[in-house]
View 1 (cartoon, helix red, strand yellow):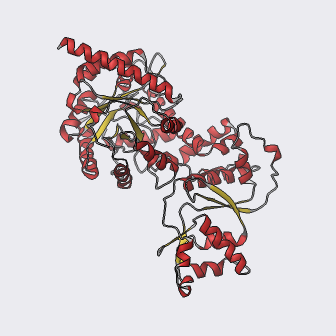
View 2 (cartoon, chains in turn brown, orange):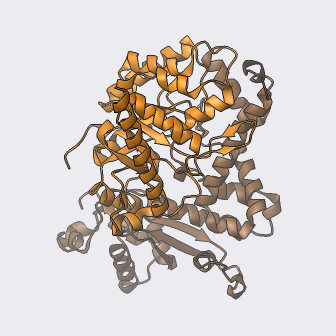
View 3 (cartoon, chains in turn orange, purple):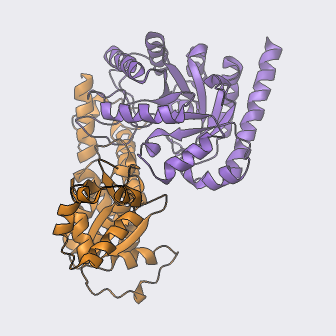
Length: 254
Length: 282
């Protein structure tokens, strides 16, 4: 068998468990080819399930080990990784969980997973040249509106309906007590960011959320301000103070 | 920091995040650290800051798991660019990965999958090692992975396969003595024959690790202390190869740093005794 065909057969086996194509290429001796191949399939499934556990620790706790492992293995087979780094694996896992019929009654689980993945993305994002108070102070007033800006890569915005931040916070100690959390749905927009070395989580009010949505792709400061629905200059001032404090903006001119 | 040849680094450990505080707050008796390259292929954040703080104090080696040198997919140039950027930051004594493939048709299974030991695979891997070394502008070291299958079409013993890749490309070898032991057990060959066939000058450094023995076969788990038989094999390797940089690689069930430092002290003893014996024989 040519190397490319052998690797294709191997890939098919790992994803399906069907070794009909591959087994004839394997030497069977004291124990047979299927048993030997099984070691690889087990390593593949367990290794990636463990990687998902590491990336989604609170989701793991909420679902329990058995259910999480089952869901993780099915996800690994349905959406095997394409990227070289394990910490990047699982971007689609929250969406996969939200589609599981068994979790229909627990919609907050996939929201927590989405929040956990946003934390990883924020944690590992590039350090960029952020808009600072000096950037704005040094700009002639007539150029302020036209300042080109976009959201910094570490600034992750996660809209949720469940008390996700509270659930996550409760899990920062061993044996979390979830009974004290009010699980009533309350739509909110969470910001996960890393202004310096530590992650910061904030709940955004509607104007701040709209401002950060407006700057997701490059735009101008004036245009973003007009889109955010801030009722007066004070509300806009609060947004500007927030984005400067948490280094949420990058400017081509910064 | 003045750089030494990789073979002269001494005795090292795999860098694990659980040990950051103990490393930065103490002075553990470790000569160098090996990092898992992919864990630091990030653009910023705390992992890189910790890494560079430790790098200021210790020489480092970069060890990857996603190069997929044996895959029939094209080399992942985005991955190689990230690897090269990390190497520019870390300035490692050497960059290593495994003789294996990790995926095909765009997937990365994150497992070290076995290659058939054929002329076709040999030519394929050698050509890709050339490509990687020329892109990185530096030598690559390839490690023997533990394997659980052999292929009916295998035509070349693994030790000859590795030696020939090193001869054709000038790459170095990372000899994992535990993996040799595991594969020898699983495929019923003599581990000593493997070590004796490896060209001395090609060996960059040695890995030591533990494994789980299921009696009929051994699974390479890298989650136990080094076993007695592997220490003996290591002593044999040092007697034959002379002083070679050596490290202990623990990937799971990570114990406190102190425990690994003690195991490393044992490696120093075993190596010293082997070198003494070598001198007596000579």
